[in-house]
Amino acid sequence: MYKCVIIGGGVHGITMANYLIKLNKVTQDELLIIDPHDKPLANWQRCTNQISMPFLRSPIVHHLDLNPLSLEAFVKSNRNNENASFLGRLKRPSRLLFEEHCQCLIENIALKKCWKQGSVKAISQHEEGWQIELQSNQILYGQNVVLAIGNSEELNWPEWAIPLKKHPEAPVHHIFDINLPDLETMKPPFTVIGGGTTAVHLTLKLHSLFPNQVTLVKRHSFRIHDFDSDPGWLGPKKQTAFRKTKAYQKRREQIVNARNKGSIPRDLHIKLLHQKRRNNNIVLDGQVHEGKVENGMIHLYDDAKQLLQQSGTVLLATGFQSLLPGKSWLMPAIEENCLECAACGYPIVTTHLQWGPNLYVMGGLAELEVGPIARNISGARQAAECIAQAL
Image: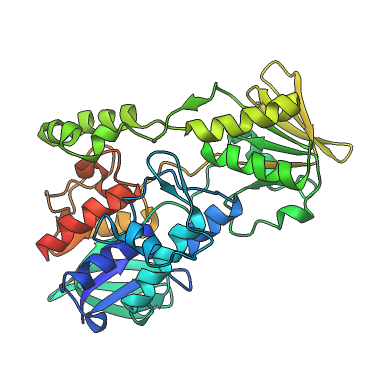
């Protein structure tokens, strides 16, 4: 029986583990982290590396450690670190620097001792806490359980792309597909579908690998925002009124309206404009309605059946589906354990993010309490602090 079991070893799960250990809530022997991957943050690193994201969108004070100045102190203690670069007035850290800081945290608190690679099959209440059954049929027990899961395995495929997905001669891929072939082995020219940060990063990366052989197709004008929600949501300025809202449907509406979905920061927009001045064909406005394989190329058409683009390879930068994380095993657990949910299907939790007896949530599962920042690094920090106070 573990004192605490964290399901999910991504940004949220590792933040939670770091808080619990450093606040002396648990020891490494009392903590277990369950994740499908072989090491902490593996999926986050895979996705950010896939698009060669140079800098995080978050400022220097948003990271996985307790002290907001931890990343800054890390840089000062490693002055010869070639990856110690920041961008802009908010000092957004480079991805490589952020990863090094994370790895340092993981090693310092010996999190690999707490790691269990596996996928959850079911959870249910037990007389002393919770029983967790893995897909391998192994049974584990925890006095407290924290759900720190995301929906990164639920890729968003546009309807027009789904038929091509099964076509043997249609190289259409989602950029975050775990089985994505190496980009350098793919057939140019490339078409990137999307209008947000991932799409622009990917377009710039492909342009460096295959100059003048990539086009970004977007259905809306670029939405320029430095953050994916107003910074007021980071603190009481907006959170106080949000938590006073009793109707969860209105909370959901506030979350949807607050998110700058599909937006890009100003510096990334400037980078793309710089390339567009050299190659006007790098960006195309239009909405794909249908895709066909013709003469060894993928032809993309709009709703008027006009040809938008011919492509050797189509890469989807269309994000993830807006589904309840862990739905396959979480829905039975909700019914079996009478866990309360709002009309949108997401958990109704306490101010300490408690969903059921000794059961806590963070990330997307906590957004009806934390607000629109719940899925971000800042949301992970706030959730970890709340839950740690309750344990």
